[in-house]
Image (cartoon, rainbow, N blue to C red; front, side, top):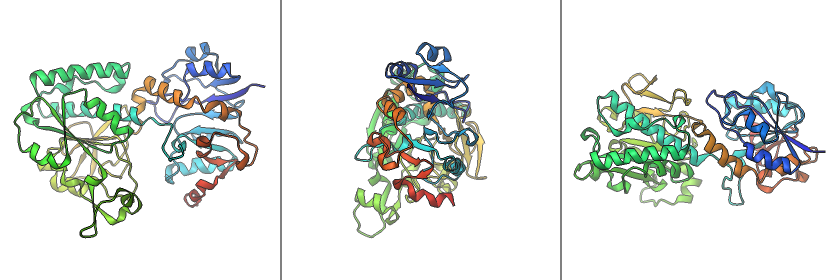
Length: 433
């Protein structure tokens, strides 16, 4: 008997057009004896016709599929008893808004496999959209910069940058940035914003994607300790953008007098370090936040700093790609959607005001940035996921967890098995009380 997997429509956001499995991969699965049933969707980047041509069945009803693939969270009423679901659940930190979903899956005896926890032997994630988030986030941040400057009656080359969703592909977006780069090299940046400094926190996949986009423009990389000097001298700065990458040792110092920064010690004992990133903020034009953060770590940007220093700061835009609400960027008071990507945080009123104009920095905090590059992101994701799909489709989920035959990276990502938290995730029980 053929095995069967379902592909759910994405309905958390009207802007979510990505898919976990592309039509090309459906063809491969069909050849391997795995049937694919796809729910209809009016917004999905791949059409129903493409899936039908690849050999999938298009149906509202996924009840024949023991395993269902999605990307974002699934509405509570949708879950069916005893099914296995594969998606980004956003539950491992005990996120309160997703605990009702997790409880329902427990009640129904479901299996939950979370892409976020598919890791190798060194705990490195294998399935992710990080690079695409960085690409889209950098482009959105440049758009925001252009619009903020326009609102201040400053003509800049960044007005020529379109939003990621307006480009047919990443290659098209890169070609458009090449044109902007030529403008900067030939005409230069407006005097009002020279020198233009763009800081990146973090150096992983997200940061790499963002930096690759900025590096299409003429950039000069400097070290954090050079930032103050560069901003005090405008000579030679009109035809370049100064790029700064901040690492952990740049943003915190040991609390203990005379202490030395040790990366692993910081990871293990962040409470023993003080944040010093705000000493750089007066010299940054744009901040692109790509860093992993939990409440154990010091914040990068506090509301107090913005209240007290905003009016004398150069800072125009915060591209919060990490998008931790009330997190490392305290003024990220809400996540935004691609349909409405930015807001201005007003330090006088502690309010988020829509648009690019106003008192305070523009904050870009889209939490589904890869959805702005739906085709490129889906193809990449599906190509990584493909090696695991057959095993997930063929697994016998009725056996005890220790006998569940899944590739080791996938088995590490099984949060629930038959409605029970697996050993690595039993700590999550405290979030369900």
